[in-house]
Length: 232
Image (cartoon, rainbow, N blue to C red; front, side, top):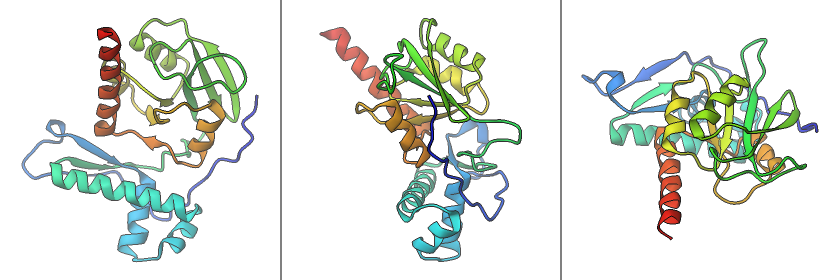
C-alpha cells in the first residue's frame, strides 16, 4: 500500500540555532522544559518580529493560512506556559517535520487494531496487536508480539521508528521513550480515527507534537480510564 499524498515541506528562512532560555539561578536539569519547534519559532519571527500579516507569513512558509495560524497559536501558548510557570524554553535546532537528516528518512509507527487495509488506530499503545510502519510513502503492518508498553517501545526502537502517533500511553513506556534520543510523539486525538485519516492529519501538520505537559495529560487520561475499568 502506498501513501500517495505529497508531504508538506515548510520554508524556514532563518536558521534558529539551538538556544535555551530559562529562569535565572536555576540549573536547566532542575526545571521543566518546553520545546519550541523550528517552524513555531519561524512563525513567531514572521508574525511578531517582522510584523507581517498572517497570509504573507503563510506564503513565506509555503503553508496554508489556517495551518500558519494554528502553529502560531501553539507557539504563543508554549511561550506563555513557560513564562507563567517558570519553565525553560528550548528552541529546536531544525525543523523536525517533515525534514530529516541527509541520508535518513522518517519512519512512523502507529498502533492499529487489525492488519486489514486502512485499519482504525488502536487506543492502547502497549496492548495493540498490530503496528503500521510508514517510510518513504510505503505502509507495512506488522504483528506486535511484545508484551507490555516498555517491551513495545524496545521493539519499535529496534525497528528503527523515530516518530510515534498514539491515542493513549502509560507512564512506564513514556519514561523509556524519553531515554531514546530523537523520537517524536504525536497525538491522534481520543476519538476513533482510521490510519488514512491520521496520516492525512499528520501530513497537514494538524496533529499535536506532544511536550511534557501534554504528555502528562495523556498519561493521566490513560490511567483514569484504566482505573475506572478495574473498579467496574
